[in-house]
Length: 151
Image (cartoon, rainbow, N blue to C red; front, side, top):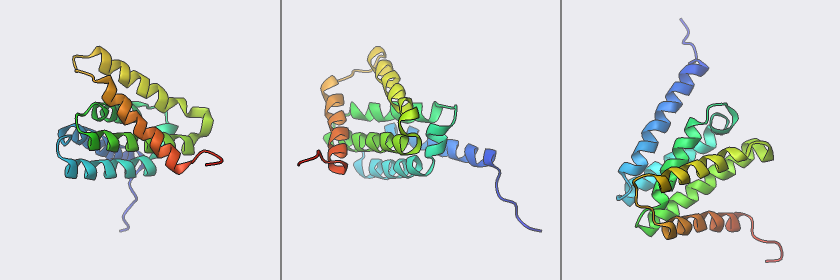
């Protein structure tokens, strides 16, 4: 008997479970940089590998949960955590652009706006300077990958 390949639905369920676990581990390991780096590396791999699921389907829940958890990390007291969160946020935005181009780039942007809104209206103490600092890491990643012309 030959083994059959897993169905697309089974693959999506497995990927969804991986997303849920990794997103929950982002907050759980926010104080342990070595563990957090491992989780961020795994999430970056998922972002690159499963861009069609993140950005091509009608289900925005994966993108929403990653954006929210990353913005929580952008509010971290630890500068390295904010830098890692900003770099992964850039990777998420880059993967969205690469997969969809301009036609659907709004997905990540909208989910980030929703996440910022949830953070600022929730009971969490949000330090705007920290979030701006983390978002500066996004800009820095972009400048490294795409330096300004004439520089």
